[in-house]
Image 1 (spheres, rainbow, N blue to C red):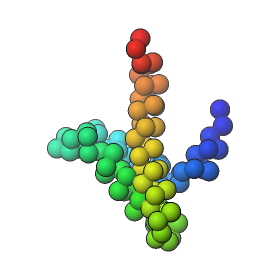
Image 2: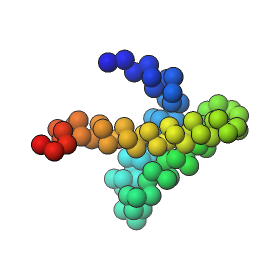
Image 3: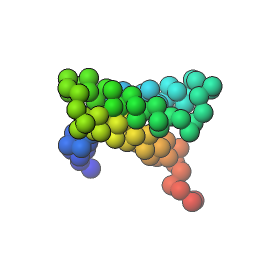
Length: 89
């Protein structure tokens, strides 16, 4: 399985940072409801996308926000793989 699509469509360092941040929020900060985690990661991704590309533009904000949201989906996929839940079994 090739992971080249990550480097082509996402910002890998932002993806990793958002994945770690989302995990910390989920496991450690009980006062933040789970429904706000994607919003937090989208905003964090937008900011980190601008920092990583050293430019503030609509493109970097959107790519960063999309990468932050993608980290939420990746967390869910990895959790299901690790826990052995294949959805509906």
